[in-house]
Image (cartoon, rainbow, N blue to C red; front, side):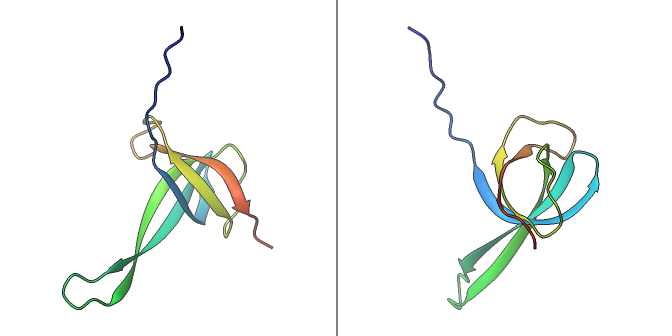
Length: 86
């Protein structure tokens, strides 16, 4: 019987903001959180460098998945392009 590793990898959706590097894109992920004291919904964003073999353009909506460290800053990879920029 073969062993199956059941590790859950983090998956995020975001917008490509830069593709000037070779095989690397910068993806901006936005999320809504509630302020702990005032209760107002606040938009927080975080940028990830992701390994790109699909050829994403600036403005594309992509899905990224956590992976092993590829370089000093890259530990995410682009799994699919959800929406191409027009």
